[in-house]
Amino acid sequence: MGTRLWGGARAAWSARATRQRANSLFSSLAKHQKETDGREGGTMAEPKVSSSAPFRLLFAGVGIFPGGVTRTCQALESHPQIQVECVPEDEIREKIHEFDMCVCRMSKFGRNILSRAAKLKLITQFGMGLEDVDIEAATELGIRVARIPSAGTGNALACAEHAVYLILSLLRDQKGMTKSVQEAQIGQPEGRTLFGNTVLIVGFGGIGQKLAPLLKPFGVRILAVRPSWNQKYPSSSDDLEEVGESQLSDGTSKKDDIVDERGGTEHLQKFLSRSDIVVLCCPLTPKTKGMVNKDFLSSMKQGALLVNVARGGLMDYEAVTAALASGQLGGLATDVTWVEPIDPRDPIINHPNVIVTPHIAGVTELSYKLMGHIVAKSAIQLYEGREVTDLEFVN
View 1 (cartoon, one colour):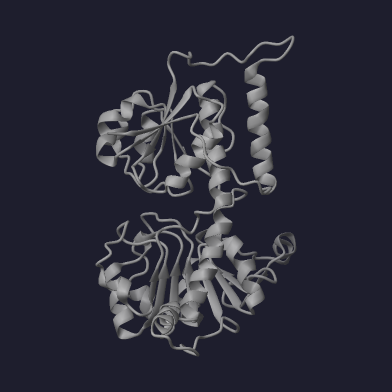
View 2: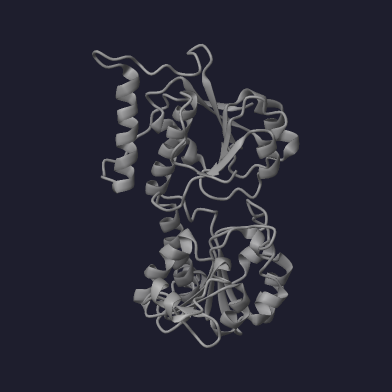
């Protein structure tokens, strides 16, 4: 059975002021409410859907990322015409025809499900990843697909902060510290410092761009790889002046005081061989699936550390476990796993140099409050037949 959470669901709100993005979203929703409540000398907006036909918003799956549902319901408190319901993944195919909008979360939406979605206007993610949605099929069926932009919502920042935490957890041996406390020992283990290390950021999108300035004060050298940089280096002095970049003799680019060297994917192996810590921040696509394979790991420095705040599917499980066993990979700290949730009996969890967190890099009060408001606002706009303004559409 699905779990229905009506738009009037109540929860305690933090009294702390949020950032400018939050204020903007709150003001937007407040303005909308004032307009729809009616004004003296004016008329109320005429919704495209009558009050007898409520707008139904599906959150796919039950018991995963519950904060997203809570925050969305909070933002819809004054809009009872919008109903929020969580449906187990194995019931989505039979119920998808009842919904106007869907937040896909970790569920798969292939053609077999989308073809049954007679009313569905929009599929969005409570975040960025859309690898489980058949975008081609959705486009053919007239269903829009979108993500919440990471910039300005706190999501990318939260993931970047979590990456720093994971790096430090490996360097300072978090598991060893826990063991020492449990055994009443002090003064051990001996950790390592982040200062002086070279960090490679693989994928310099929203998360990578937030991560670099957080790392720089630690005194590290930062390298970054992004596919779109493959053919974008200046070839003349005029181009150089226009973009403000300098090109190194090996084709990599040096641009600013934060990122020391930038390169396209053709420079990945070279950068891997020079890096003490590698952080995965790239999306999961057919090209990046399983990219952390035997060749990738053998290109890394002996004993280098790997941190993943992107997607578990980027890593080849067998290759990673083999590299950990041989010592080629000095440690793994990952917020995402090959199968989610990871089996608690998976032996990799008990490896002394492995830290696993439960896909919570982007789960913070700030990011969830802002993303909940964006989902709520999008549902309101769809209900009223207006343009959806705060999502990033991919079709």
